[in-house]
Structures are given as C-alpha cells and as structure tokens.
Length: 412
Image (cartoon, rainbow, N blue to C red; front, side, top):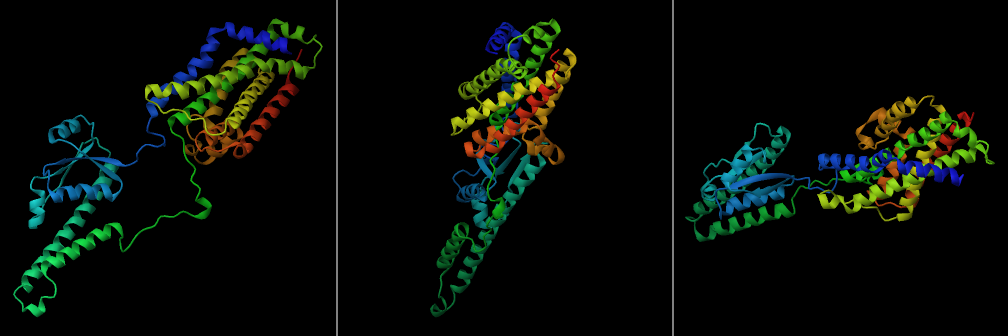
C-alpha cells in the first residue's frame, strides 16, 4: 500500500500543471476576490457614515457645537475639508456629499436670524445614505434651533422683569439662561426619555461574521482541496485503462487496502495545500494590504479539522472513480459538481446569503460542515469541543463516500 502511494506521489510531482492548480490557482482566486470584496463582507471596519463638512465659520462656538452634535448624534462621523478641496472631490465622486456651514453662522444663530446649512450631494450618490445623513443633520439643527429659541425667550423674560420691583426679581436673566444651558447639557448625558436596545434571551448570543479574508481563504481552500478528488479518480481511471490496475490486484492485499493506498497521495497533497494556503494568508496577505488570517486559539482542533477535510476529499475521489465511466465525466461533470457543492455549501459566500431552501440544502454537502468548522475556529475563536458536530459530519461523509465507492467499484 505504501509503495502504491509513493509511486502516485512521484507521478503527481512531475505534473507541473497539477501543482499550479493545487497551489497557485487557489491563491489567485483568494487575492483577486478578497481585494475586490474588501469592505463588502462584515468585519471590523467602521460602520459610521463619513460626512464631509466645510466650516466657513472657523472659531465660531455655534459652528463647533454643531460639529460636536453631529458626531454625538450617532450614525455619522464628521470629516472637515477645505471648500475648494471638497468641491473637487465631490466632482470626482471621491466623496458623495458635503455639508457647508455658512459664514457668520455663530453670529446669526445668536441673533436669532434664520440660517441655512447646505448639503450638496453628487447625482450618483447613494440616495438611502444621503437621506440618512439629511435626517441626522435636520435633527441636530432642530435641536440647536429649539435651544437657541428657549434661551432667547428666557432673556426676553429677564428683560421684561428688569423693570419690576426688586421683590419680584427672584431670578435674573443670567441665572435663567445658565440654568437652561445646564439642563440642555444634562439632557445629552442623562436624557429624560432613553431607549434601551435588548435582544431576546434565546437570541442574545451574537454570531460573529467573517471578513473577506476569513471567508475566502478557508472557502477556496476547501473547494480546491475537494477538487483533488478528481486527481484520485483520474489516477485510478488511467491505471484501469492502461491495465496496470489489474496487476495491482495480484498483490497480496485486500481491495479496501488497495483503494486506501490510492487515497494516501491525495490525502497528503490536500494537507500540504491547506498548510501552504493558510501560511501565505497569515504572512503574505498583510504585506499587500489585506487582513491577516488569524488561526484561532486551538491549533489541535484546526489540525484535526484539516485532516478530516483532506480525508473526506480523498474518499470522494474513490466514489467518483467508482461511478464515472469516462474521463470526461471525471473532468467536466466532476468539476461542475464540486464547484456547485462548494457554492451551495457556503464556500463562495456566507450560507445565510443564500437564504431559504438553498441555505438548508447546503447541509447535505461536506463543504458546509468544513467551512462552519473553520469559521468557528478562525472567526469566532471556539475550540475543539465546539466543532465536534462538524467533525463528526465530515467523518460520516468520509465513511459514506468510501463505503459506496468500495461497493460500486469495478476492480476488473
């Protein structure tokens, strides 16, 4: 059995095209798609909407208060620009919108004169985002207007009371305004009516989603490791066609041991694939601006899952060899089936994006359990005890593939 495995390994290493397909092609997919999808799949990126602001009233207290209020309102963060720079960036669509605070904003607000904030958006700007920004700006503006009007009213009342006898002047205008401003400040830190967001107890555990690297690296690794099943099947088909497989049957070993010997080379290459792709993702991807792949906190669990993924792929190769009748079926139909399994299993994109029936259907392919195990370890920081279900599922798939392959295999 070992001699059979060594012979197949030597044949594989001489095939430069196979080596490229196993190691270079997966990294091309990972690099291109991870770069293109950066920021589209969850992760640690800041989710706040950036609002470019041109402040034509620099040094004005009301202008600075407006900027602070926008930052504190939630949902957006202010970034200040020079007027000419903002105009140029807006025309080139490098920014989608810009809010301009007019000159003399502080003076006009203090005098109670109407003031207009100008929000200019590019015609191709996202309308939903612009509407969200507009609502925040309007809310902050109304709050400032109400505060200014109340203070003005208190000052007018103080002026009216100034002509009254001293015994009626319990509070001066200055005290009233100071008290009102104190209440305004307190309302920001300790509002009278607050909203508390909670979740049902049975849904309180948040399932962290992967970023593009955490999705693409294990996803395409699984796909290309399972594509090596074709190599196992094609090796067996070629030897049967050439007649060398019949000579192997004369060796003093069981038929199961013979097929196991054919599995070893691709099992080893599958493991090497995983090590190489994961290694490049840890050390090389950060050098080109992508996120570094973290490997979680349980190396033993990661190794065991990888062993089962490679073993399951190789046993699938035995099944393909048993049911395929032509080289075309192994190549064309096999590739289509394996890519489809990868897509349905959630290796190309998170399974929940499929929704409904397809999300459920993914559980009938080993790719689903493999990607779930890897992401539990890599993304969510779980350990061996948390991926036993996924590992058991991969082991069951391995046994079923090998058993059916052994049963249907034509040794003659």
